[in-house]
Image 1 (cartoon, protein in one colour):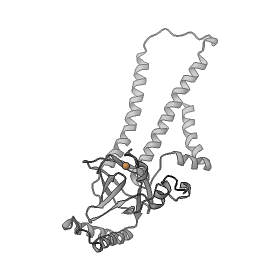
Image 2 (image 1 turned 90 degrees about the horizontal axis):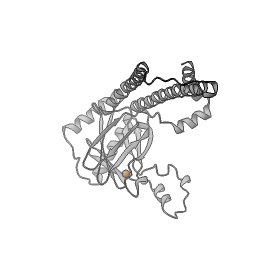
Image 3 (image 1 turned 180 degrees about the vertical axis):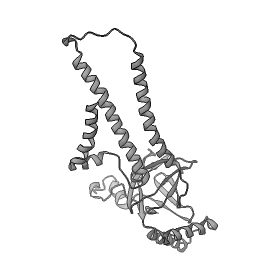
Image 4 (image 1 turned 90 degrees about the vertical axis):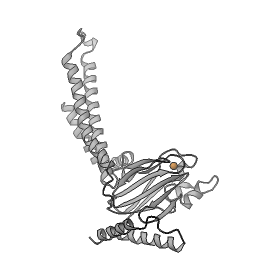
Length: 293
Ligand SMILES: [Cu+2]
């Protein structure tokens, strides 16, 4: 038991102590991300990893000790009993306790992930072969997001362009999804042809985009910035060429951006705002109130 405790204490110390190792570790490990959910998922992942490490250390410790200590050359004589009720109860009860202890925090996070109530912005995401469409359902703004020109040119056969020289190769789009910082954004996900999956690792979120079916997820990005992801469901020839880029802006900048989008649409003679009415006005007012705070 002492050994297990020592191993548990040494693990995180090793990881925190060495900084080059730390960089390598963060490249390998799950991302912490920039949302409450992504942090919770990371926490669960680490907790369960250390539970597994502790179990492995205990089980292999006992096994190696037994093999070494009770070997034939040392004169060990095998026992002849067949059952030991006490041992069977112990090795049933202990795993049950461990599993229940892990299920409690995991279930709590799962429930939180599914709870899209109280969202402040709804975006409908539609997957196409091979691009994404983003619709701000309460604001009548919608656009397609396709692979950036620079990446698209570099990926052509015999393009002569070195992909490593292209910034954010295959992870850049012409028009990213723009969302406000610190707001609960609800994302409705569907597809128009085959199954895709919308995935942004920094938000800890990935959901399938299925034709004729609407999936839901939410995130609340705490830090402004650009977050990149990819289609995560093999969807055909250009599956690798439909990245997801989300730009998180402070509320005021987001409002300006949204107004610009509406103005551009109107100038281009786009059809009138689809969901105009009480709801749009109310959402705009809510955003203004939230902005004033
Ligand atoms: Cu796809």
